[in-house]
Length: 470
Ligand code: NAD
Image 1 (spheres, rainbow, N blue to C red):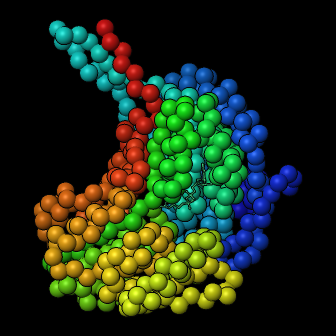
Image 2 (cartoon, rainbow, N blue to C red; image 1 turned 90 degrees about the vertical axis):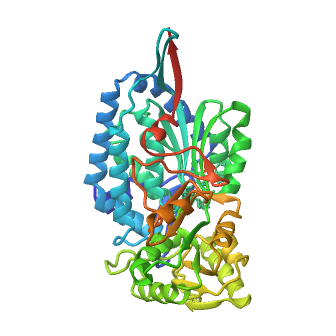
């Protein structure tokens, strides 16, 4: 089960309730996904619960070995997985897209296996002895979004398994086949019942997962409004939560930059995955001294980045994944245009095309409180705001309720670091935006969520800290 046809056959539903899956780049029917209900979810939770004690009873080394075998299996199926992901999600094979995402699944699975988490001795002196262990929680419920469906699912699954939990995952409705295929590949090597998947609607199956008293922890990545619903739904059971929610990341460009030198990194910071990335650069504040040059250099880079059907190796940008997201981007850019902002490039989609392509769009000379700036566009349309006082730029960057990532661009690292300390965000990058590393904790400030993923902190987040004292 390694190539595209085998993977698709393994995850296609032939009976029960189903949903047709169309390639967002072409409108072509690519398969039929299962749609399951709350009864199927309950059966999966029972299965995960039954499998958990034996999984937890394995040694840490045994679970690490399983994770490495799962990573080997993903690696062996990587080209088929990337093709399925490209067809269903829309992202091109090439560039920082589908192959990159499958590669990320392998890297994060191995990192979850290899991250050291020794027992910590807290005190050992005349006052007493206490050590900290990290015990399994039980069954972890994972709920993932459609933008990086495989990689984000892995971020939830791999650390949970490492720490001795079993998992029930609910993928997003519009990228079900991708996550089903990933799980099927991993389940070739994992013991029965350890990793379970239930594709179904968020409002029924997702909601029931968050309400289940048998679920010890929810790992959720998605929008802030759904995150808030999950907090309420999980409250009666005091279910543990890690919430990776929406972002509207600001970038602040200081007057001392070389515009041509930063343009490529600015571009990918904003347009990776065609802008459909939680921690993408979504509003760019540029000092007046370099404003025109930065906009010009950015537009030059953007003009060289081909957008099109994912399976064409030339393309590095793809369509929006679904019609609802296309409409959000379209509406926000239209509102920016109506406000008098200057469209430097793009902003003119073919609304009758078969695919949901929205052209790479840069909007300059926009009011800092225009909708395209204040709302999360989650697509290839970047507003560039002019500022002349850096304190004002910091104030604008911090004034929203979200705070996932941010970036500062400067040729003076110390100056950039001093500015970073004033920005309310879970990560502040300097002279880049959005780069993640499996050992570096990632998560949001303010309404971008709470909890951190990756590294030792990420492992601790899917475990119950237990002190053994005396
Ligand atoms: P979404 O919130 O609409 O859906 C996410 C998941 O939640 C889906 O699987 C959906 O079926 C499920 N869901 C919907 N209603 C539910 C409910 N009532 N109970 C339980 N589950 C429910 O988000 P989306 O549109 O798939 O993803 C885009 C959003 O996700 C953006 O805001 C983006 O910034 C955010 N995001 C955040 C991160 C991060 O790490 N912080 C990463 C990726 C995406």
